[in-house]
Length: 404
Image (cartoon, rainbow, N blue to C red; front, side, top):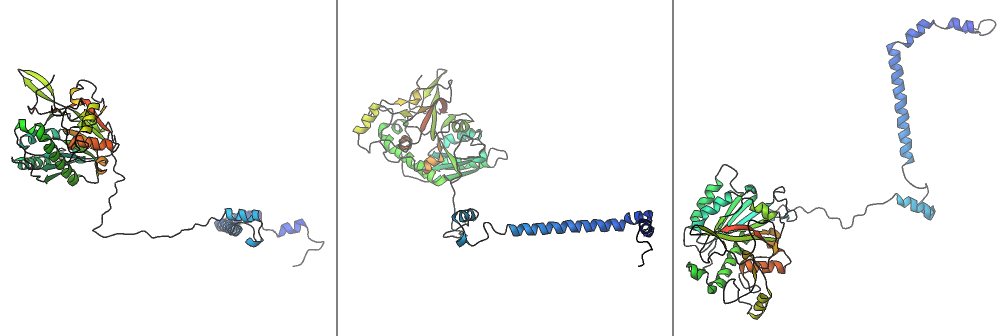
């Protein structure tokens, strides 16, 4: 290229440049703008990749770039502060057991709490039966009224040594209840048959004589234990013992009892007796009591196989009976500690039974069955509580006159 005479000057150079309009048209073309954008993105990505690669290289390792043998103690300590290598000793892979004959039962989630309904805690309702056909219809009438959700209640019955139609009447009533289309049916029902070859005259006077009490209470304890051992399942949180011959009880009795959150709890048991048009509120269950010093001295003087029974002149214990206390018109939640209990209505935390506290069919501290159960529970450190103002009404069996 030849330079103009006189050298290179601005005017000559400007004359060689394309017109401004041509340059502007070129710059604003779509292809040019797209090329600039692609070039810019490529440059940014390249810089980012280069920067990340350099950072990765700079953090490839921690500590000085020298072997450990050349490090000072402080440098070595700083190096190891970043290096905590996990160590597994005697590692074992999980053991998988798929044998159909092996079952795992986890009782840890099973609790007995005040929030039983909200937590859907299961209740096992147990009733031993003997020659009870006359009471079963009323029994199920009251059971159907229970307000605790029936789908959380399992029923269990033991029929023993019966000469009447107890088993057939029970089966018929259960079949009727469980086939109902509403919310009355219970989660399940189990009927256990077990005869103990214990036959006692049904004469009221003999059946409630002192001589009959020891054998009778021992046989009743055995029946309760057989029923408990057969019906109690891992999922049960509470066990509610309920006799068949109850005349009346509150529909919310389970919720009322559970609210106390006690290991063992019983209500007061009275009965109605009508004489000359007057309602006599009779005290029924004298098996719920507080021990006395006189009772302790008496027990110490007796052979260990003797079973004490309340209300008999042969052995006067001087105990305080819950049946003679309280009033259903007063605060129903008032509590008192007991040393013996009756069996008409008992709510027990299932873990108490699981711990081995059952109904002695022998003399335990000179008591048997429910009273022996209370003694055993207290010996194991469990609370045994009575509600003197919470009255459950028993049928009038006429073996004792009503007391005002």
